Structures are given as structure tokens and as C-alpha cells.
Image: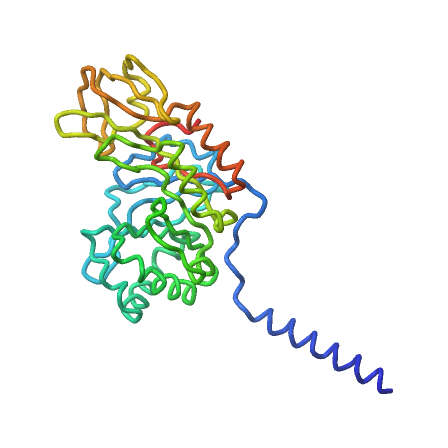
Length: 308
């Protein structure tokens, strides 16, 4: 009889635990054992005809804080590709040094702002948090904690700027995926994404590998009277490129032709220095991500050139 009583107690405890677990919110779904491929879609890019067949997720780069509200910078309807079957959509919440991001410094204000994201999360899978005002980095945990409490079933991705910021275990717990922006290492000097720097950054974030995706640029730099200017990759590929050679995994040459800047302006080059990644070099970075057993890669930005 005593044995039967013990068995009954054990069964009761198990049933109680299962009942408790059933009432808990489900954790955000993140693909396992899958090499993910994602991409940012800037608000200034027309997505008509954009091929998303190889993508796991796409993120409209569009939400910004203004006067205590979230504003979408998208300027036209139908910004997403028509065929989005099997592709997740996560809004990018972008906060630059000129944006109104001071709310992050106060947990209560942060909670109130995160709560206002509800309207954007109703028909999406989550957000990418892109805080590029690095003075605010110590306060990001206010955002991630509020987001995880308010939206336990939504994905939360966080961009990482090479190795200039620290990541504590609270962030590791709150965030589903870290997006390593392994580009723009020195825009003022025409240094885009040298492999030596990429590897150094990856080694610095080795503890994040299971949750880390490697960023790959689909643009390059061209030097003119304004200094180094960001130019879309497809226009560089179609231009004349003299004295082309590889330096540390980047292609450098003297480019001539009509180019398109990141913002969509035309730039007429006549033997200007240029630096960019070829299809081969992009594929090498994808192979590097697999070698380091990362979760995948992502691209900045969709619409700049076809993904190899």
C-alpha cells in the first residue's frame, strides 16, 4: 500500500507539472539544424520582382521612433514581394544617433514604447532591433526584457556592430538571433569587409555561434570628390573595372560607368577607385559562416544585387 501511495504522489506531481507547462507561453519558434538566409529590405527600395525564394526571413528596414510613437518610413503600398510563402517577416526597429531613442534609458518609458509595437506585430513574426547609437547600448536590456514579457511568442533579432560592444548573458537569454554586421569596418577609408577583420570579429563572438548570423554586404564603395560613397553592387558589377585585384577577400579596381548609390542617386565614374565583393567572394563568406557553424547569413541589402 505504501508503494502504491508513493506511485500515486509521483503521478500527481507529473500531471501537475504538465498542466503548469501547458499554461506557459510557447517559446518563439526558431528553426533548428537549418542554415538560415535573411535580408534587410530598406524603405527606399522597390521590391517588385524581388526574388525571395532562397530566403528564410526578410526584414523591412522601416520603423523609427518619433515623438513617442513608431513611424513607418515606407513610402508606398505593396512593399513586400508578392510571393512570401515560407519566408518570415520581421520589422526592423532602427535607432540611429539622430533618432529619438532616449526612451531606452528608462525601463518604464521603454516598456510603454515596446507596447506600441503591437500593431506592427499582429501580422509579422517579430522584429529586428537595430540600435546604432552606441551610447544607448547599455540600455538595450530594457527593450529586450520588455519585448520578451509582452510578446513571448514573437521573434527578437538584434544587430551587432562588429566587436565594439559587449553582450551580457541577459541579452543572450532574451534574443533569438544575433545579426553580426561584418561590414562598414572603415567607410571613411574605403574598407568594406576584409576577411581578416571578419574572422577577428567572429572569434570575438564565439560564445554566440549557435545564435549568430554573419552579415554580408551587397554594396561597395567608390571614391570621388565627396570621399568614399556607398554604391549598389549590381551597378558595380556592370561597370568597367580596370586593374582589378583582390586584397584580403575584397575586390579593388578603377571603375568607370554610371553607378547607383545606396540611396538611388546616379554617380558617373571615370576611373574612380572602388572596393566591393564579387559573387565568388560572397560565396566564400557563406562558406565561412558554415565553417564556423553559425546559424546562417544575412544581406544588406535586398535589391542592391541578386544573391549568388
